[in-house]
Amino acid sequence: MKYYTVAMTFIIFDVEIMFLVPWAVYFDQLQWFGFFAVVLFLFNITIAYAYEWRRGGLDWD
Image (cartoon, rainbow, N blue to C red; front, side, top):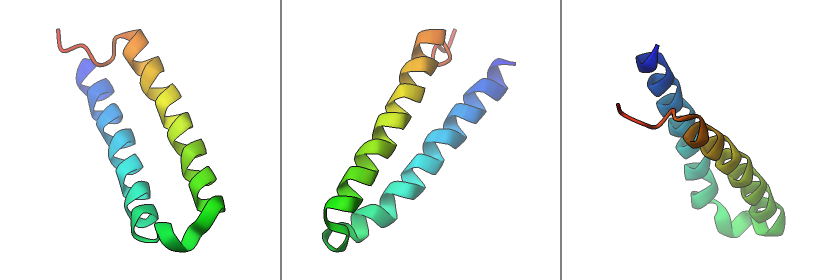
């Protein structure tokens, strides 16, 4: 079960990077809406990361 939890965590944070790359490329064209959209996105991902960390999903024991 631990393998699947680690695999799902990797997939979730890998998809996060795939959403951030286009944002970084077009950052100057998105203006304030793009900035606030990414801040909201990163806030949501941070909550998921903190939840995973607190549950012990990132421990390699």
